[in-house]
Image 1 (cartoon, rainbow, N blue to C red):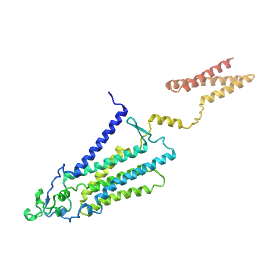
Image 2: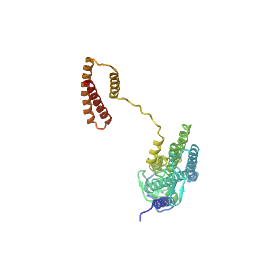
Image 3: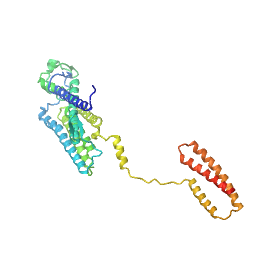
Length: 379
């Protein structure tokens, strides 16, 4: 039995909810469990790239994780809700609903207002991208196992037991470290930078939303200032990670690329630059035709019509005149011969162009008129 449209819509809605739940669960397993084993990467003795001092726990950072996650989750939600409400109220005040989204039937009985639909859609895509960014970053950290700049301060290797008489000696294996295993494992997960990726993803998504949605007058400077301010905060977050010796430059740049790529992909390919659904072509065409103003097309007279008018005037004058001289008769005879040749030329031309039916009618009328003139002369 084929699926009905309402049942199909409901099934697709449930399918999207399953995908969202799976994404959240995968991010949870990456973040809070040891399901995925981190790659153990070795190091050289006394490597200066990993000998930076330990900056302390993450909570002591200038941008702690609680603040970063709160801003990345709360600010976009607030901006999108306020922006969609303002746009909807503006359309309601101007009654500009003809080219906007209409109330949509979802399932068998659920009618969704365009304001609610757009808000839920944009926030849902943003949340999906946020978890997807976290998954991408955690997968990169697990696969690469790149060491933090302060790794040796946490690892605390026994250089004497390891025989590190030379700086070029390479050390591999977890048994080389004598420090806290949890801190060491965290120091092995730095590439790409999660803080840089999440901050720039939130900033890029909001920047594209503000740019494509807010069309009010007087915002030529307000929009760039707001968008550049968001991007600047994300950039400063990455700089802070490098300044505190928590990440390398390569970690931060890779995190920026991941966050920007996911945000641009979702905005351009999934939500279509935050544009609403356009009306169907048929309704749009009929509305445009109905609104199209009436235009007056000027009437262009052809040269043959002018000849006909002049000839009719001459015929009237002939009928009113008492007599006709022999010279006038010869002039009319030569004019009739020239007219017949011109008429034949027009007939050949119009038969080669069958679409120009008005020319055929004029040519036939031309020949008939000069034929009648001939009989008038002979008579």
